[in-house]
Image 1 (spheres, one colour):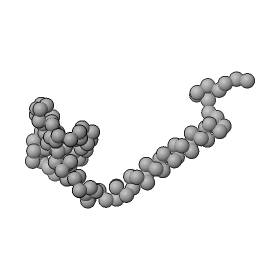
Image 2 (image 1 turned 90 degrees about the vertical axis):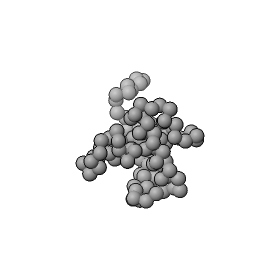
Image 3 (image 1 turned 45 degrees about the vertical axis):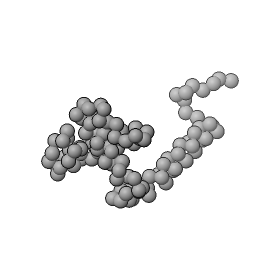
Image 4 (image 1 turned 90 degrees about the horizontal axis):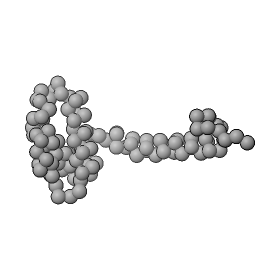
Length: 109
């Protein structure tokens, strides 16, 4: 009996289990994403506006090279500020013509 290589496709139970897990994961992702994507114009949590502000402060300090200024809060919000700063950078990239301000000055505006 030969063992199939990883490049061979199989319609066996393992392949179906993998497909079922992939579909379940994608379904769960969509169930979590759709309600949030529908309400992007409104804040979802009470402190979301504060984190947008903190992310802008973090991004501004990072662009200035002020590493000490990247500490914008005493709580461990590293992931939130990095992701928020990335989101703000993406927003700027999509709306730079309307903003009409250099990227380095935009977080402080």
